[in-house]
Length: 511
Image 1 (spheres, rainbow, N blue to C red):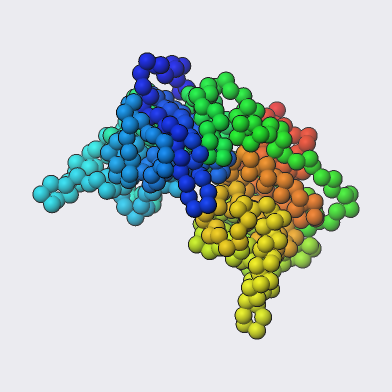
Image 2: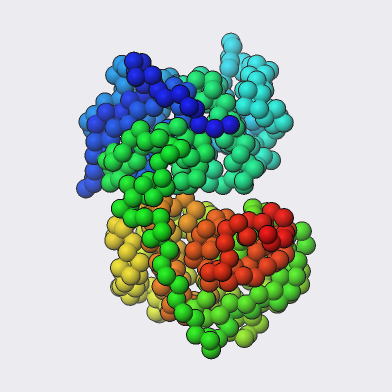
């Protein structure tokens, strides 16, 4: 498996060419002259910060938006894509990060959703089952049965079903938006094998990711967007250095992402202590502490129990044994309301479904954990609520700085700033961060890292979970290695290296 070594044929028009694409929205130009092209049998990686124009470009190609200027050419011929149906008719299929599958339907029903086989008014279920089985076989996933209800499948298997749907549509170009975001390592390997098979079959893939390691692993060429413009296109995926890609996206180098570590005073008090925390089937006898101003990272593979530990500390689940103390006082287990009142905050892994009210304004999402402070005589003091929100927006550099804007309209990085800002307003003593940069581009990551460091500098204790070892090592002061539900090592981050931590995670022993 790996990128193709054959460059696109210069004498043959690309499968898809985008020329000078422009798209305006009220008060903003989302695309300002985008150019790029993708050839048949190529995986073309599309990079850019949140807000660079990637999502708008995807929606133009998928027929959800029509451009205001510019051209789309398919096999060298100009085409219009006025609707999603038109995109599908042209063989352009988009698989969004939040999969548009229906958990209550069976696999084959999802594969043929919207284009069911029917004859004389009767749905031809046997034919759809057979076609679904054939598509799954082509993808190398015969273990997924056409009659299985989708709710019973893992995120990785649901993604395969989305790919099977693309094949059922006779796709020529598949656009994949952050397809690895919710997958474990072995699931990402399977995804890449499938993509490699699609490339070998002559399909074109536009692959959008924030993970630079994936570009080298699966990509052939790279296009970089910044501020709605193409700043580089056709870069060689295997040989273009990460520093160059980051510079194109942000104007900064990779090494600039992590702010310098602060100095934790020797007499810094312990703000959080966890003793003997156990929950059957998830984690066993977990003990550690966090001091004021300290960032402690939990490094572990998916399924190691790291996020479950965070959930139990916060009270989202009740452990079978153990104790959690905050500022020396025992915390009631299994009760998030008590945890919040005691000074604990949580930024969960799935911010959209677990942390945000997407249809509400930014200011309301910021004040959500502190509403009681704004209530007087049964009424909410909106002026005070808005004043605190404006102060937090300014402090966090949330963009756009519009407290009345619906939060769903913000980029992932700015949404995450709001989640963290909620606890800033609340004045929490300990903040739990579960995958704080998932789905966040490298530029916004640097801003979040600076924010987290700034919070620690005010004396907030921080417990951080991340799948990315460099992130844990670069941001944390101390690293706890979690393997199979147990903390097997406690290391000072500045004296640990990625190879050592990975060895502990994979084998349970240091090099």
